[in-house]
Amino acid sequence: DQQVKQNSPSLSVQEGRISILNCDYTNSMFDYFLWYKKYPAEGPTFLISISSIKDKNEDGRFTVFLNKSAKHLSLHIVPSQPGDSAVYFCAASGMGTGNQFYFGTGTSLTVIP
Amino acid sequence: DGGITQSPKYLFRKEGQNVTLSCEQNLNHDAMYWYRQDPGQGLRLIYYSQIVNDFQKGDIAEGYSVSREKKESFPLTVTSAQKNPTAFYLCASNPQGTGELFFGEGSRLTVL
Image (cartoon, rainbow over all chains, first blue to last red; front, side, top):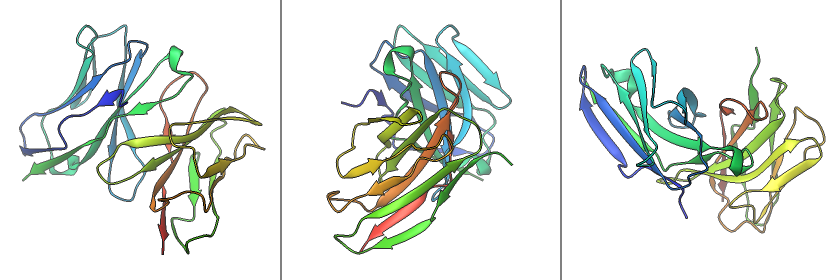
């Protein structure tokens, strides 16, 4: 059973506009959430994270929002750049998960110049 | 520089052969992980280890084996019992209980 879900396999956005990537989770034991960016044939690189004690975390053009009651998080990229084109994975972990990390299926973002 | 090194980057194997993927880290991290990525799927956990000489099965451990004899090394063996071994394999590490996963560059295994 998929505990972390990314329901949009792909997203296309015009350069300079906002990209919003969504992620839902089912396990209430998760208390740490992460976003990774991945290019083909490479390992994922860490982008940004958020702890469950916060509802927002910002790092430059990237902002992650967490809605615990809805078990939903989102990654906002503003402004989007062509170099942002990649697959984005959300992941979740928690004290009750034995230090395991659970990943979504990914969203392929294309930023159109 | 500190990081995770996976080798080989590309590997071809005939059906029925075992193959071992190497993962070495110099980050002094306690926890290490092996994930598998298939097209259209997320990263699925094969095995993980939180300390030397101890490891646990992930969601898709069947047909795989690991060892953790040294803190910096966590090799994965893909055995002939693994029915669909062609995939992209990712090794990761994590300082125990904190922070994010750090990933290697991955190993692409193709079974001919």
